[in-house]
Amino acid sequence: MNSRREYIVIFGKAKHWTSRFLNKDISHVQVISLHNGFWLRLDPAPYGLDTDVTAYNDSTLEMIRKMDDVRVLRVSLHRTKSYFARIGLMTCTDVAQYILGLHLRGCWTPYQLYKRLLRMRGDSLVNIEIIR
Image (cartoon, rainbow, N blue to C red; front, side, top):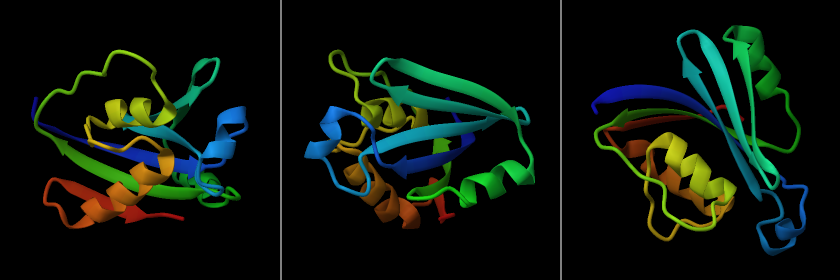
């Protein structure tokens, strides 16, 4: 596997009971994958994986920029190996890492994932742009 993929990663506030144990500003993460001219939104929710598909255009990105109380990163990854999801409890952070093809040890919360992605900005295999 040797390909470059584009993603929008949205960090925001969760609306479930576990959020009281997490960072007050970043307690949830969802991923939008750009694939063949469409956005595929994957939002790991407590009741399952919420998904929808939207045609890619600049107005979609503008709508994301105008969202309140979120932090948004545009991530372009050069994937060089496969990553298998771990067995057990799958949090939104685990699902986001799996979709991105990352395995970041010790990264358990959305806030930790946000900080780790920001630290990866200088890596030659990753291009990260702060959108909001």
